[in-house]
Image 1 (spheres, rainbow, N blue to C red):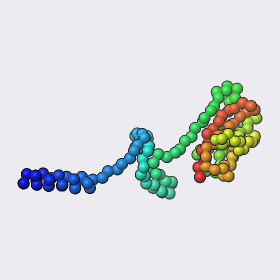
Image 2: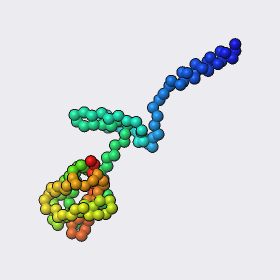
Image 3: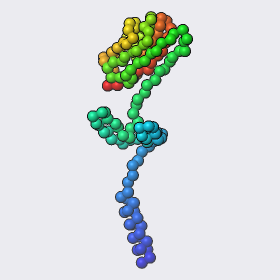
Image 4: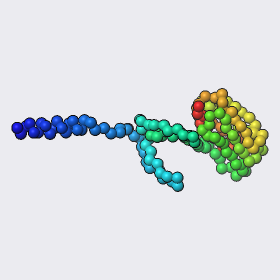
Length: 159
């Protein structure tokens, strides 16, 4: 009788625990971020996610989004006083290079293997650079004045 009661309790515990489940993830890292617009908890390395789409865009919950904007190289040259910007980055079709002055500026677009894709002289303060025919990849846009590099931008092209 004593063993029957113990066996019954063990069976009920095993049946009860067998029905339990939880979310499972192998995370590389994660954190919480707060700002004026609200707060966000994120985890890098999650396996499961959902995508919600609305009129203003979409968000993939549970996935770390690859979004990177960076300037890889710049010089602090006091004799060259230029305002440079490139947008949108990441891009899908084209880039716009904005400069304050065009005096002797040129640009060169390279792929990751170092192959020259396009090279032109900057003739206006706003120059469009087409990436429509290029595959999705990372590119480098080198802006120079004569033989002196002013800035190199890292460009990401998405589909």
